[in-house]
Length: 554
Ligand code: FBP
Image (cartoon, rainbow, N blue to C red):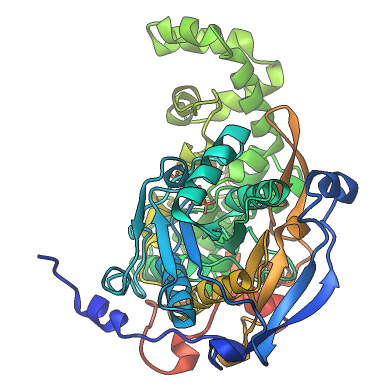
């Protein structure tokens, strides 16, 4: 027997808010076409690769007579990539719109990500099944996976599976890679007259799937609120005990949106922004000095405590570290890895490394703590690359800062105490109960995806915008996925992919942070956001991120 927590029971009864324009009832939703679109870069190349789905118009839905052609819909849905709070509500919104249109419509869930489509591993949803997942976190309704849909053979199998079930549309809920796959699949189906539409939904806690249309990916709101709650609690503990420096690594594979949003919410002493580190070509030593300056100045003022936020992917943005990693990849390429692994002791391995690296990279390597040095050689992905996300950068930076402080102590410029503690917040935010914002946004994305299907669109991303306003004022519509695409070099080949949205250093969220961080570094300006609130006044429960508010000029 399943035991439900009181909150889970209460959340089953929560009714997500739809954009005003989708509240009129299915028969009163019509389409307003906007302008034709262009890809964000490499227009000619993308157009040539997507002849059937390129350049389509943006659309919005509004109140009016529904002119879509009635037909029985059998829709397949896939959850793809890392978990993000609200995924279940996308499925619920899709299901509700589909059933409200015609109770004979069917929703099929493919299990464990895109692989479920290829393996025809599926479940057919009904009310009882769906109701168990309303407003809950996680992707466990059908599971998720990271299988890429990209080969002709996979597309042929997908076509057969769709034909077998009479599928009319597939909805892919995923991040930049998964929606790239959605665009490629949409083009394949159109080029081969398969008669199946593909619609994407923008998901990822990383917040890097966005442009002027897609204001944010879902899950970013809840995940950053979850991390900010705990960072705020740590700040309060730091300010109470006054004896620890906390180094907190937060998720977000490459972009630093998560770290920046947490900093805006909690006003820590330090927050590194990977994009700035890269733009300023900062070395590990410069970053360590930057943090040590804050530790030093606070100690001079009697505050031997602080909080530093480190974005997960920062080391990849440090130019000298990037070079070191690529040299290590070369050093261990092919059979050389075996020779290295056969060496018995770390001293022998160290000698091997010393021989193989350039002088510059060896200098970088030499300053790393031994634990991190070893991680660089042990943790490799299936392609033979170092998995930078597994590098404990929070420990790396605290160790480098410790060395800097020791030097300063010798020079007589620092006389404080430095006791670092380390944390990594990532997985604990990805499956939290979706905030009201994510519950509403996700339900709307799913509901809206069905409207796009009804109106025959293919290769579109479900789009809900004006998100910093109350849901009543949200605008629902669709954007051709090709609009977000450009050509990038992947595995030695030019590939059409969705352009990742990194933190813009001239954007308002970063500018706000930049204008305040010097004060935050010296003084104690912590803010304590507290836990996500699900019930209570809208100004406490329905507010979305500071990033979005600042981007909107609010
Ligand atoms: P998506 O891009 O698929 O949304 O996943 C993002 C993410 O949560 C990153 O923040 C993190 O680096 C990665 O997934 C972890 O992946 P895994 O779940 O495979 O450990």
